[in-house]
Image (tube, rainbow, N blue to C red):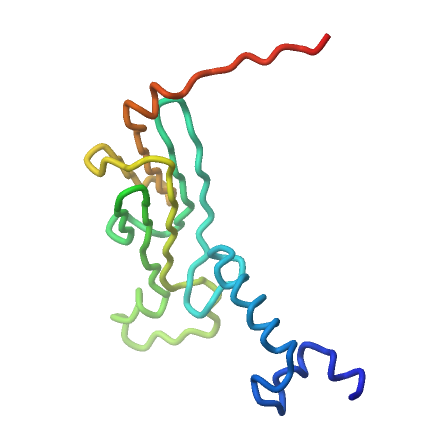
Length: 161
């Protein structure tokens, strides 16, 4: 066995998948990173969406940067305690496909679909959720249910003596 057998890049080449014990370890670690978070390792035609989640005493707010998208391009859905934001950003080719004779020399703008799912600590009432797109920013406001608002109590913190 040479020192190159310990390099991760060589674990899979010229070997059966079960032959080397470190191959299964690598597959397990890879699967952890696959589920780590959207945008960490982007796949194929996925668009990277940056979002913030904030909370007040009465509501949660989710803001997501969606440059170039309109309300027709975005879908927000609620199931139980989960909220899902998904949509698709069209490419320049798709946007301009009706123009005869247009040829692109460089395509740098990203296109593709995206989906973000967030779990909140309470069941969401879909009728009270408000979603607005303005200037490429989606803002989703999710009011807390009355029992979650009542159970929140501010605790004062004193300086140690």
